[in-house]
Image (cartoon, rainbow, N blue to C red; front, side, top):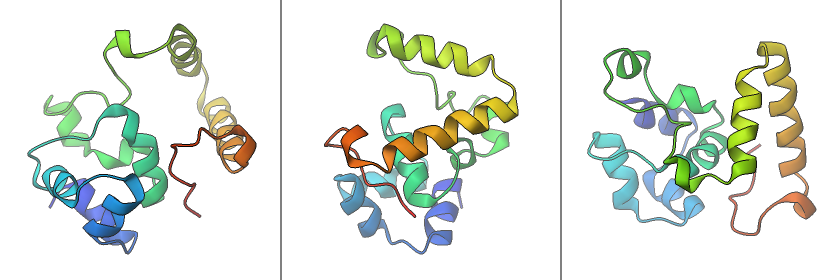
Length: 125
């Protein structure tokens, strides 16, 4: 069983629940869980909020060590705006305490409707 199955079931969700929340087909969720496909990098934050976990927890350590999956934070650089790329770079320079503060601040902003993009999945609580 891969991390996607474990995290979904730990969150008490069915594949249909995940599909509905992310506005995707249930078959897409099944492909992630069977290891046939990986979610797009831009969906990872919404999946992590839904599963109430960190993005890194969606992938096993073995997958990284064996090179079976790409870094979930990596995207084709042409897909990232310059501002987003700078934020990733700056974030990587922070220590764990600083990263925690940034993460908490982002969660606070996302909890307020005036700061959210309309197509984002609601923050899971």
